[in-house]
View 1 (cartoon, rainbow, N blue to C red):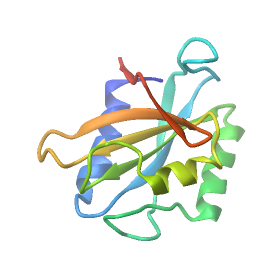
View 2 (view 1 turned 135 degrees about the vertical axis):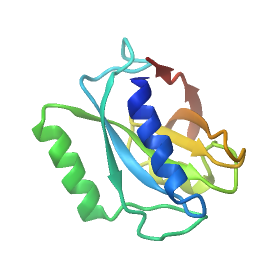
View 3 (view 1 turned 90 degrees about the vertical axis):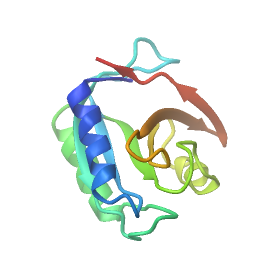
View 4 (view 1 turned 180 degrees about the vertical axis):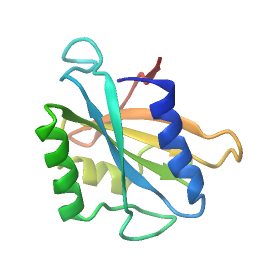
Length: 141
């Protein structure tokens, strides 16, 4: 996915607002794309969501909130390109919980902000298909 610096900074800022608990949200893209489909999709908007668990170990977006965000993105003629969340106690790599959750969202990237490096958050993006994790480029513009 291609993402403008200000949108990526918004994702990182969200993670830093609650460094003790995982935060989450979604990223809308202007067209379908991706590493296996063609040129990378371009991120156009970040939507914050609420982690219903308020936990350092897992995140979940309430299904009604996720449906509302998905509908808003679709109504704007855009596509859900990524689900993002933070890892406050581990590297930005999908956990088994993330991998299981991703089964419901094929083709959607998983952007993870790792906060274990203190003032230097590390951001990585993955495709998770059939339980397989593949890191994909997050091109910052």
